[in-house]
Amino acid sequence: MITENEATGRPVELDENTRREIHKLWSVLELIERHLWHKANSNAILHCASDVLYPPLYTRVQHALATAKRLMGDQR
Image (cartoon, rainbow, N blue to C red; front, side, top):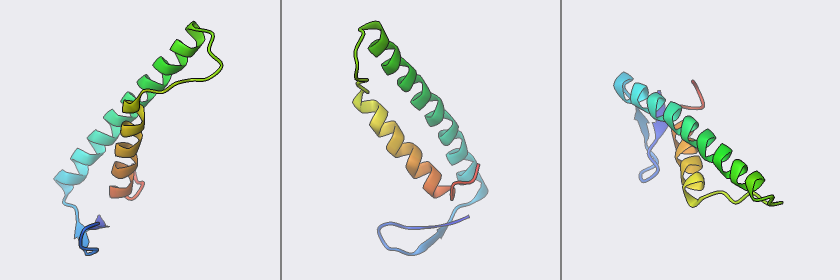
């Protein structure tokens, strides 16, 4: 897998161990994102709120997940 170094713009090849670790990270981040989404929606329902307020951690997890997807080339 070849990805691009953001700082230099040069291609970087990821070895098998790195790809495996990123894949594990991707899986965990998806679980965390789902948990935070359900918790925020449950709280909104509990408080009869018309808007769902997501915690700041939810946004950070989404950014980390997007980075993992980009590194893996969106391949699972």
